[in-house]
Amino acid sequence: MAYADLREWIAALDKAGELKRIRTEVDPILEITEIADRVSKAGKPGMPALPAGGPALLFENVKGHPGAQVLINQFGSERRMRLALDVNALEEISGRIHQLLNVKSPEGFLDKVKMLPMLADFGKFFPKTVSTGPCKEVIRKGSDVNLLELPALKCWPQDGGRFITLPCVITRDPRTGKRNIGMYRMQIYDERTTGMHWQRQKVAAEHYRELMRRQASGSEESARNPAAVDVMARSLGGSILAEGERPTGKMEVAVAIGTDPALTFSAIVPAPPDVEEFIVAGFLRQKPVELVKCETVDLEVPASAEIVLEGYVNLDELRLEGPFGDHTGFYTLEDLYPVFHVTCMTHRQNPIYATTIVGKPPMEDAYMGKAVERIFLPLMRLTLPEIVDVNLPVEGIFHNLMLLSIKKSYPGQARKVMSGIWALGQAMFTKVIVVVDEDVNVQDPGEVLWKVLNNIDPERDIQFMMGPIDSLDHSSRQPNYGSKMGIDGTRKWATEGFSRPWPREIEMDKTVRDLVEKKWKELRFEE
Image (cartoon, rainbow, N blue to C red):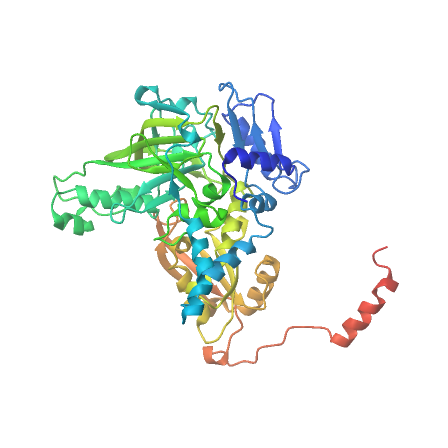
C-alpha cells in the first residue's frame, strides 16, 4: 500500500511503534541536531540504549515557531526503510527491477496477450496531473513569502546558517523537457532567498549549464559550443566565456518539502538519466504520484507535499554558501553557488516540516544509502553482469569505499570491473574499490580484509587512476579532481602471470565436522 502523503506515513510509523513524539520545547538551532544525533547512534558506546537507529522523532514544540512540527530520522533504521517502501525485504524491490530488465520481446500473439497485464501495471508508474491538492491549501506570493518562518535547522556550530536539508528540488531539462528531482541542501539567506547547492556533477547543474550555453549568446554556434560558456567556475565547472559575454536569463525551480517517503527516497536514487524520479517513485509505491501545476513557474509538484517553494535562479548570480557539517563527518567549506529566489510558497494548513541531519556515521542517511545499494544492484549487473554482490560500508561514506565480489571468468577481469564502476554515474566518485572472488561474503568486512590481505601483492594488485572526485572530498589535490585506488583481491591465475601454486584454504574434514556436531550438546558449552 502506497502512503498517500507524509501524514499517513507518520501515522504508520506511530502505529508500528517507530515514532517518538517530543513535546518538550526544543530549539532548532543545534539542539534538535544533538538529540537526533544521539538517537541515530543508539546502541553505540555512550549513546542511548535503544535499537539501532533509534525511533523517528516528531518535535511538536519548536522554540520560536509556535504550532510547528518537525519530523526527523524517518528513514533512520533498516525496519523503517522497509516500512517506507512497504516491503518485507528490500530485495523484493530489486527482484521487481530484475524482472523488468529481463522482459523478453513477445514472439507470437499468445506472448503478446500474456504481456498485457504487465503493460497495464507499467501504467501505474507514470505520474498524473490533477487540478489541485493539499499543498495548495495556503498560497503566499511575493512579499508574503517568509522562509524565516520555517523551523529549519542550524545543524552544527560552524554551519553558515539554517539549512533546508531534505528538499525535493525539481528542474526541467531544457533539451528534452523531462523533469528531474534532486536533493540539494539550501542555505536560507533571508525571507525569500536561499543557496542552491547542486554540485557540478548533479543533473540540475547540467540543466543550469545547458541554459547558460543557450543564453550566453544568441547564436546557434554558442549553444553548440560549451567551451564558449563560463559555467560556474569552481562550483559547477566549465570554461571561460568569450570576452564581453555574460549569461542572462533565469532557470525555473520548484522545491517540495515533506512528501510521501517513496518520493523523498526517489530524490536520492541513481535513476537512469532518461527516467524521471516521479516514475521511479511510482514504481516504488506501485501507484502514480499526483502532481499539480505551480502558481508562478512552469513546473509540476507533488500535490500532497506539506510545503512547496517556487522560484528561479539567475544564470549570472552566485553567492557564498556554507560552511556546512556534511555526511563526511567534516565541514564542507564555503563556496560559490547559485541563489534561489522564491516567488511563491504554498503549503498545507499547519504544515509538517521534514528534515534530516548528516555528520559522523552512522546517521539517518546511512540507511537510505544501504537501501540504494540493495535495491539498485540489478542495474549495476545490467552493465557488469559478473558482479555477485556489493557492499558500501557506512564508515566509507558510500563514495569512499566499495567492496564487491565477482564471478571471475578471465584474466584481468577485476580491473575491467573497476573501470566499469568508475564509468557508472555517481559511482565515478568511488575512491577505493576492492574486488574479491564470488565465494567471499562482502557483507562481512572482516572476511574481506582477511582474504584481500592474504591475496594481494601490493605492487602487482593495486592500481591508481585520476578522475572526478566528489565535491565534498577535502583530501583530493584539487577540488573535484584527484586519484582513486583499485585493489584486485581475487585469486591470481597462471594466465595473469602468477606462476606459483595457489594454496588451498584450511577446512576441517566434513566427517569430523558432522561427528562433532552430533556431540555438541553433550559438550555443554552453552551452559
